[in-house]
Every structure is written in C-alpha cells, then in structure tokens.
Length: 176
Image (cartoon, rainbow, N blue to C red; front, side, top):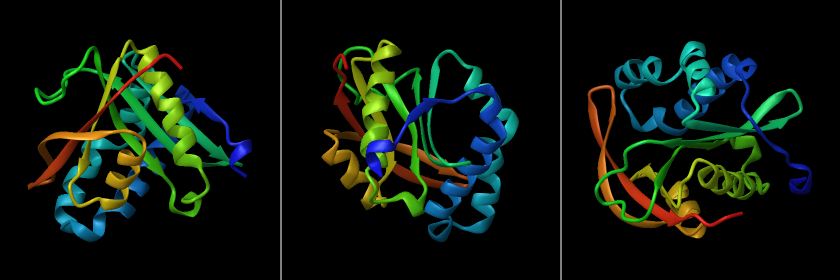
C-alpha cells in the first residue's frame, strides 16, 4: 500500500475536514492522560474550521495531507517562526504538527510524510527542523529519533491549566 501513498498540499477546501481530523487525533492521542476540563479548554484554542482555514492560507505554514479514499489518513504542518534558544542551527523551521490516524499506523505513511515535511521545511527556507514532543509520548519520540532528530532541550506546553514538558528535538534540513 505504501507505494501508492500521495502526500498533497492542504487547500482552503480542506479546512473543515482538517479541523475535525486534527481535533480527533489530538484527543485520541492525549485525552486519556489529561483531565477532561483541560482538554475542553485546550481544543477550541487549537482546532476549528476557522482556525485551520487561517493556517491553510498562511504563507508561513505548509500543511501536508495524506488521503485514504475520501478520508484523511495523516497530516503535518511545518511553519516559520521563532525557535527556542536551545535550537542551534541555521534558519530554523518548526515541525508544528504531525499525526497519522491509528488505522494507518505501521503502513509507512509516517516515513513518507516525514520526507515531505523535510522538503517543505527546505521550501520555507529552513536548514534546521525542530519540534516539540510531549516527554511522555514514547512512540513519537522513538519515531523522531529514527528519523534523525536529536533532543536539544525542553519547553513548557500547556493543555488547559496543566503545564507539561515537551522535549525539543532538531535535525538538519538538506535540499531534497
């Protein structure tokens, strides 16, 4: 199946589907480890059709999508912006979001999406790619380590009123 995977750019018409997918995958990944009131406070600040529409139209954000028929299977967002001080390297760009829907785990989608992420980071002028990943998300940390990222520090990430720690990881970006 993985040889038929097509990564495409998000479009304005994807806003509603992306918002629903992004909120659902974040919830499935993190709700069990967070208080319901913190999830309820966080989700509307990060997800919603209008928010995702703004992101899809922002020239400093590249949204990448993998479709599986008429449903989304995975997405990632790469954005220009300030990096934490612990991120050393030229022209840092952030891998802001990276989610593969559970039914598609183990099918090679994450690797193909990461290849597209690195190309998108280069396109945005990035030569260093960094990300924040929850210190308790061992599956994601293992994937990013395999993809060439190394831990360089940490920062706070708030889910509602709960201050959590994200590991900051970085890798070099080369021309695709």
